[in-house]
Image (tube, rainbow, N blue to C red):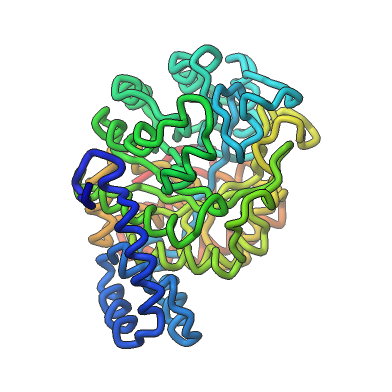
Length: 472
C-alpha cells in the first residue's frame, strides 16, 4: 500500500508510513535554516504549503524563525479574512449515543449521565433563546444513535430551526456536526439547506483510533475517514475537518490533518471550508490526564499558525473549550471563527444557570455573547454574524475562487458591518453599542469601493430604522 493523495481509500490518502516519514524528516531538518527560509519564502506567495513543508515549520524551534512564522500567519490571516471574526454557537440536540468513545462522556457505558433528546418544541425554545442572545449561525450536534437520532430527526430539527422567527431574530445558517453517514443521507442534508458539514477525525492514527473507539459504528476507521468524500459526492460543497488534539502525538495529527486537506483539494477541486482545533477537555467521567499526548498552550498556538500558513484560504475555528486567554492569543495567528455564549449540554440555553449534567465538555470561556462581542471589538476585531455567502450560492469552489482572488473582501467587510449593526440595535448592552457604533464608523472607510461604502451607509440607516437582513 502506497501513499496516494487521490486515492479514495483512507489508508492510502492518510498513509501511516508517509506521516511517520514526514515527522522524521521535520525533526531532522528543524534547524536547517536554508530549508526553513525556502519554505517561508514559498509560504509568502499565499499559495499554501505541503504537509511535509508545514511539518518542518512546526518542528522548527529557532526563536527568530518561530517569530517569522507567527508574523507571516498573522499577515496571511489579515490578507484573506481582514480583521473579521465570525461568531456561532453549538446547539446540542441529543446525547443518546451507541458508540464507546473513550474520550467522550456520551459513550454508551456511561450509565449515570442523564440522557436527553430535544423535542421539536424544545428545539424551538432553544432557538429562541439563541436568537435572543443575537446568534444567526448554529452548529447542531448529536450523538450517533440510529434509533433515537435518525437522519429524519436531524432533518426535522433543521426545518424547525429555520422556521423560527422571534422578534428580529433568525437563524440564517445551520451547520451540521453529526456522525459519518451515507451519500443518500448527505444529499438529504444538502436539500435541507445546511451550511457546512463538520466531522472531526479525532485521530488520524488508525491503530489508536480503533483503540479509542472500541465499540459502535464509529469503530470503523475507513468509513469515518472517507466521510467527507461521501459528503461531497452527495452535493455538500463545504466540509469542515479537525482532530481532537491530545489523543495522539500532535506532529502525527498535524501531518494527517493537512494530508486530508490535500486529498480533498486533489479529488474534489476544493479543500476543507474550515479546520477546527479542539483539545481534549474534562467532562463528566472523562479526565484529560488519562491521555498522555497533551500539548502546551504555546505549541497549540504554533499549530494554528502553521495551519494558517499551509492552507491560507481555509477558515479556522476555536471553541469555548479554550480559555479567554488562549483564545486571545490564537485568534491573531489564524482563527477566523469562534463560538460565543456556548452551552454544551442538551437543552442548556433555556436554563437560567448553566447546567453541567449533560455537558459534552467543560466550557472554559463562560462569557456571554455580548461580552465576547465587546472583547473582540476592544481588541480591534469586527464581530461578524454574516451568512451571506451560503445564501448567495458562494460555496465550495466558487467561494474559494473569490477568496483566493481577494474579491471576497468586497462582500465580507460590508456584510460584517451590517450584521454587527443588527446585533447592536437588537441585543447589545449600552457599552457594547457605544464601542460598536464607533467601530462601524471607522471601518466603513476600509471598504475599497466608494459605491459600496455609500450603499452600506444607506443600509445602516435602514437597519437603525428597523429593516434587517441586507447583504452583498
